[in-house]
Image 1: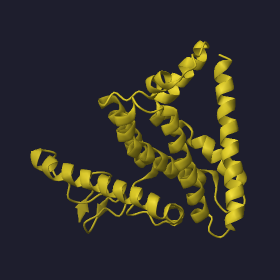
Image 2 (image 1 turned 120 degrees about the vertical axis):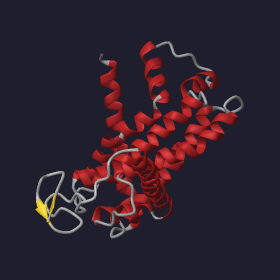
Image 3 (image 1 turned 180 degrees about the horizontal axis):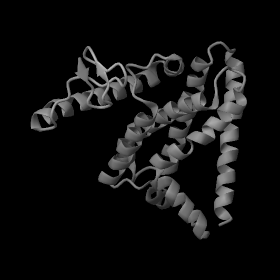
Image 4 (image 1 turned 180 degrees about the vertical axis):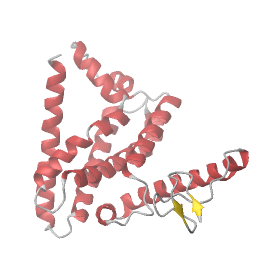
Length: 243
């Protein structure tokens, strides 16, 4: 009989049948780090790369299967989005990519409203965090427009978390172009193109995810869902201007 070091339960075998901890718990030393760090790094990155690949090969099917329980190869949604957002923010910092400065330099108009300037500056400087912040807004639109499809709000939150990951990967893919072309091309043109790519991926993902529905119905509901998200975002901006 073994005594679990985590919960004190007496058991036989390699794993505690009460809490699940393994019977073998090594002392944390340099030997432990030598084994644990590569293992943890590979495990996180394997899931990250697999999930990223699936989101651009069969996004809707992969997310639906994840919700149905096929999860072992995937990165957890929260970890996935936080790693991508952190990586995006790190690259922008390292390469001094400031979308607000680029936008201001490429614009012929001078904004006189201090709040407008501050809002635009925050949104462009913190695109990674903005992507995270808009997940509930996207989810609200999805929940309202696809309310009768058998999924609850939290499941739609997971769907939109993965789609937010899609958007960050697209943004990451375009960062080299923004860095190289930042002095020769309007940042507004680049951001518009990225937005259209994101929109196309959003519709494609929904078409696959709701594959039991007619494509036209999915597209109409997706457009309405996106409009709801934009309205909620405008309401948030209006609240910002009240303070």
